[in-house]
Image (cartoon, rainbow, N blue to C red; front, side, top):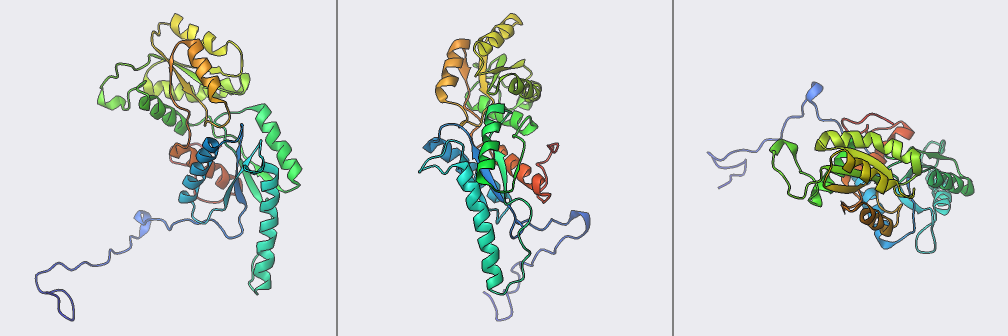
Length: 306
């Protein structure tokens, strides 16, 4: 029974945990600076509810990592239902000016907006020159000052995401350390990307990291180059691989699902799901945004800065 001054004798007393000091002190949570440029996620491909769902989840992950982040979505092939990238950028610039004017009218001392009104992050795992040109064109059409980042990869966290997607499909062991086998585990991986030779070269870097995780050969191929997937599949078979798997080095919206199905059929192998809204995607998007503005949070652990 409690007394007016505290718990009854013999009962434990919960005391507030003292705040750690020195190098073991937990850092203060980072929030987005007031008036910072918006994060605009540039989504390629034909807009669809599925594409929007992936983009919204990626944005949600980024916001959870940086509270107060102003993050929106712009579509390269936008329409009335899916806001076009150029119009989203124009709106971000207008809202930034309006917020400043509203603050000064209320008597608040706030710095005048300067620098880019938005940081555009392409929702692309690897380079695709044609899509990047279209993003640059949308930026020009918006008539706003914008910072455009690199694509998400190559990246160690994308190798992790690929590994997870393969294991979810029963095509790879989930954990090498446990030394268990999967009957359907592939002994050769075709890493499927889009963007031609440039994309294949970049995907090869992530492919080497994936090969180290799986201890099986991994070779990249371009979905948008005729015969590329079947050629790589033949090379893997000639090198001794018997059971192949197709690992999409794609977030998802940038390519039609039918193209993946056709490639898997052409190579005669099973396929994993695209990367989608895997948590690392949201973290990489935020890392690119933060690096462009020179703010925290820093790049995800174990990740070299772009």
